[in-house]
Length: 511
Image (cartoon, rainbow, N blue to C red; front, side, top):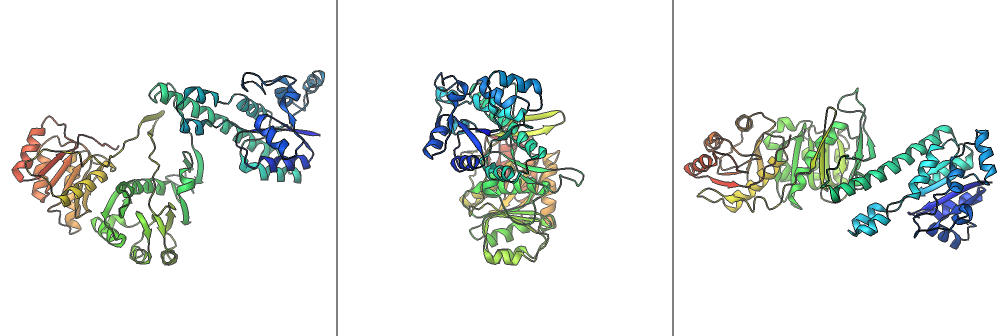
C-alpha cells in the first residue's frame, strides 16, 4: 500500500482529494487541523505522531521534523543501502506529499503583531516540500490545490511519468522560494526600510507572449499577487511584450483621474493624445486631435465602457490595442471585423491599477530598485502660487491634467493642455527647451491652437527661456516643481507676461 502525507493550511478541496486517494489505495497520514477535518469526513487518516512515535511539541513548532517523516520521503527506492536503512529503523515510505504553507501573506495583511507574524512562518511545511521535491523520482509532491484533479487523473490512469513528476518538483521549489522571498522582503521592509542586502522580485506567470520586443526574443508576463488574473481579460487578439509596456503607460494616465471619463492614446510608451470628458466619444475625439499621425497603430486606454458610437469612431483608424473598463455587446460586434485589433478589459467598468509600492529597472548586471513614484491628487491643489495672477478654475483643471500626464511621461518633457485635452507634448528629450519646441512644432502641424493652454513640466525650468517660449506660444498657466537657482527669474518672467505660475514642490522624473 502506498502512503500519502497531507498537511495543508489551505484546506480547499482536501477532503475530496483524500477520499479519492483512499479509493485509489493510499493510506493517509495527516497533521493537526487537516487530520481533524479528514477524520470528521470519515476518512481513515493516521495522525502524524503515530508515525513519528513522538508527540507534537512546542505549540506545534515541531511535529514533522522527524526521521520517520523525512526518512520516509527521502529514501531512494533504487538504492539498496537506503532500502536496508529504512527497513532497519522501521521507517515506512511516503509516496505522495501534499503540503501548502502557513498563510504568512494573509497574516501580515491582517496584523502588525510581530509575535503572531513569527508564529505564521512555516518550518516543517517547507522542509517536507523540499524533501519530496528532492526525491521527486520516487515521491509525488503537490503544493497547489488546482493540481489535485490532474494528479488524481495521472495516478488513476497510470500516466505518471518522469516529466510530470519533474514538473511538480519545479513547482514545489517555486512555492518554497516565493514563500521565503516574501518573508525576507517583509522583514527588510519592517526593519531595513525595504532595502536589505538582498532584494527578491517574485512574480507568477500570467501570460506567454508570442515573443519579446523582437521576434528572436522570448517573452512572458508575470504578475505580483493576482493583479492581471483578476483585472486583465483578453477579449480579442493576443497581447505582445511591447503591447504590455504601452498598455501600462496608457492605463496609468487614463486612470489617474478617478471615475472621470478619460481617454489616453499611447505610442511606443509615450502619450500622443489625452482628453477628459463626461462623454467618452468626445474624449476620444479630442484626444485624437493632439497627434492623429502617431495614434496610427497606437494603444488606447478608456476609463469607462466603450459603446457602439465610440467603437465606430475608433474603427476609422488602425489601432493595435484598446483597453477599457468594459465594452458593450454592440461595440464588440463592430470591432470584430478589425482582424489586427486587440481588445482587453479590466472587468471593473473603470480602469484598475495596483499601485505597486516599489519600482525597479533592469540595468546590465543587475537592477536598480526604488520606492514607486506617486502623483498625488492634491499636488496641484496644494501647489504654491508664485505669480501675481492666479489661474481660473478651468485653467487649474488644465494644469492638473498637464501635471499628471507630464509626471507619467518620459523626461525631459513638457505637456500643454487646453480645455481638458492635451494639445501638445514633447517627451524624452535631452533638453527641456527642445521638448517644448518639438511639442509646439507638432501642434502647429496638427493645426492646434495652444493659446490659453496650461503648460506642465515634470522638473524645474533652469532658465526663463522656457517661460519666454511659452508666452510666445500664448500659454496662460504654468506648473512646475520649482527649485532652480534662477526661480526668481522664472517668476519675474511669468509676471512680465501676466501668466499664472505654480510651484508644486515635487519632481517627477521618469527615465
